Length: 253
Image 1 (cartoon, rainbow, N blue to C red):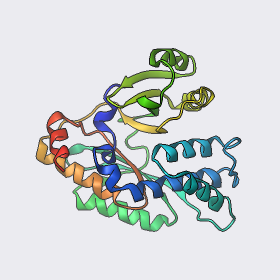
Image 2 (image 1 turned 90 degrees about the vertical axis):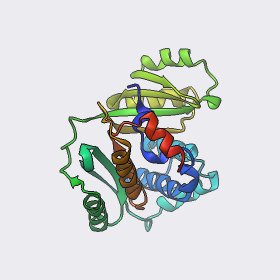
Image 3 (image 1 turned 120 degrees about the horizontal axis):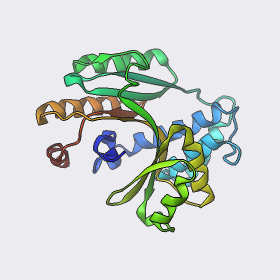
Image 4 (image 1 turned 180 degrees about the vertical axis):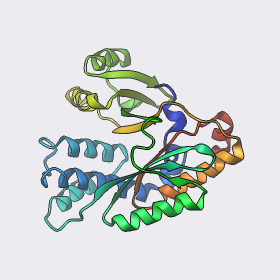
């Protein structure tokens, strides 16, 4: 699973989180709302694992505690917003596969907006499942190094027994990967060990990446940013290789 950071959605690059903080907060609040609504308006994280995970992700995004508590209270009410998940699969220009995750309260609006972005950049919107052969559903856990109070190698040995399959170490974070079926087991073990994740989710990870010349790669970057600027879009995944040349160009932005 090496290379996760080489394809991760573009908002992870330096400076982007600060620029889009309000949007990031809105997205994690949606996750909280959906976790509550899809589990019978259950606002108790002790008995709602999906909510527990959404709260962890909200903390990882630095959403203030008061905001989290207000989001839980509001979502637990009968008159709160009703969101649902919509996923879109297709190709951008130059054969780059795109997987777009959305949460929406208006499906017609979201479908129209996503289709318009695909068309604007010369891509093509496909049917759900059309990219299954290119992406693997994988549990991905991100832990800030400074937050980890247990030996990293010891943690790996523990988590392997609960379904973790591979690990990465980056400059500031550790990454843990599992089969999507083992996501809950790994998540529960981390909770038992009192280890907070910066983010935990089942993500579509490409089983190979494509290298493009810089000019073509920047077209894909602009397309990804267009998706991420849409309020209904939660995450964008793709199989563009983030080469050193492309990384250097992005660092200038």
